[in-house]
Amino acid sequence: MIAAVVTHIKPGTIDSMQAPPPDQGSRPVTSNQVYTHPRLPEILQRHLEHAERKPVARHNREAFSTLLRHLDATPRPLVIDSFCGTGQSTALLAARHPGHLVVGIDRSASRLARHAGGEGGNYLLLRAECEPLWRQLVEAGMGAAHHYLLYPNPWPKAGHLQRRVHGHPGFAWLL
Image (cartoon, rainbow, N blue to C red):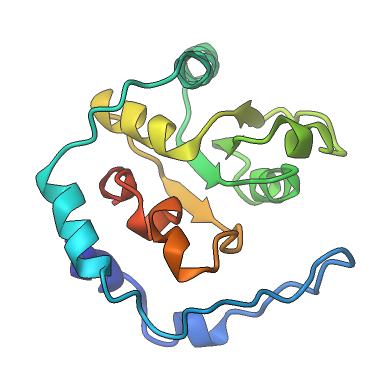
């Protein structure tokens, strides 16, 4: 299943992407992990064989209801900006996708409160965990026209594998 996702990347796409200018407040990321985590295939296989049974928290259900209300009010294709932080990327993506509802998702109320632009006509910021929202989208039979994961890895240590997207039980919902 993972290989199917990788084959959709056009040759040279990653090499030709330019990194944004460094943020004044950013700092270098250091990690004790140089190569692919040795347990990643085992963990992914376990997650694919055994569905996540953790109940969706109330704040994540409420965020999903808010998303559905916005789509019901103005039906349009969906763009997701997972781990959007302050929502700056969401606002930029909304300008790039004017005919879509662009939804920025982040679990930090503090980061979302630092959003400088208010909410635009075609974007929405939700305080929620991304994986449960992905789960609810899958369970509702909904997809996205585009899905962005622009946030850098906040869990660089090898022991944090299951906190990362690719080591989390919700990775299958992302696919």
